Length: 317
Image (cartoon, rainbow, N blue to C red; front, side, top):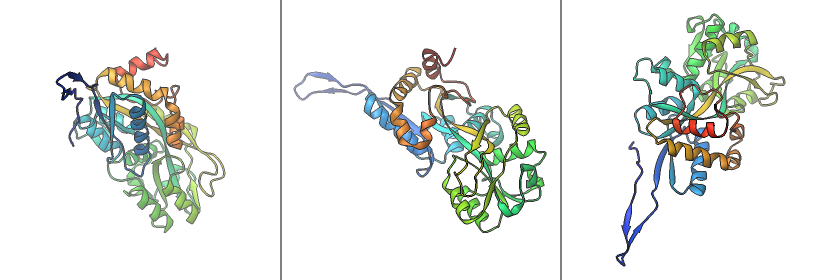
C-alpha cells in the first residue's frame, strides 16, 4: 500500500497564461472492515472534508481493524487510522500483541470516538453469574493476538483466573456466536458496540445472560489498565436482558502518524466539529462523539495539531 502525498500542480493554460490551481492534500485513513462501524464513520469524515474543506482529499481504506491499523500507522502506510484505545496503548508501548514487534512510537492521538463495550455473553443454562464462574468452562476469548483476547485475559486476571483455568477457544465473533447457539461453548467475550448483530442473533435463538463486572473488580482493573471505562449494557438491547448490566468498555480512537503536519490535523478537527451534526447522522454510534468526550480514554500522546485545537476550545489546559 503506497502512501499518497500532498501534491502541488502548476498548470499552464492553452493560451499561454500561467494559472496556479489550489494545492490538494491527499490523506489516507485506515478504517476497519466494510461491514463494521469504523468504515462508515471514516466515510462520513471523508464526506465532510469533501464538502467543506476542498483542500483535503481524505481517502478511506478498508483494513483488518485495530491491530492492522496500528501497524499501518507505524509503517507510515496510512496517515490516520481508527483503532481501540487499548490496542493503541499496546502498539505505542510495545506490549501485549506488540511485545515482539517494533512499537508504534510515531502514533499520536487525535480524537476519542465511541465506546467498544466488553460483553461477556453466557448461555443461561451454563450457571455463570460472575467472571469467576468461568473457571473450568469453555469460553471464546477472541482470535489469537486480538484486542478481545487481551481484554479477556485482563478481566479474568482481576478475578484470579488465567487461560489455564478455563477451556479457551480462539474464535472470531461470528464463530463464537455460532458456538454459543449450538452449545459448543458456555460463554464468549465480545468487544463490540452495544446492539452488535452477532450477539443479537444469539439472544434470539438461545437464552443468554450478560455477565456483570462488579465495582470492586472494575476498580482493580482500571488500577492496572487505565484505558478501561465503566459502561452499562442497557436493558432491551438483547432479547432476555431486561435489567442494566454493569461492564467495562474501551474506546475507539482516531489517531494520526506523528509526521502528518500539525496544521492539517488542526484544520481537520476544526472542519469536523463545525459540521459534527453530519457525523452524528451518519451512524448511531457517532452521536457520542462530542468536544466534551474528545479526550476520554486517550491512551497515547496527542498529536500537536490536536493539542492546538483542544487548547483553543478550552478542552485542554
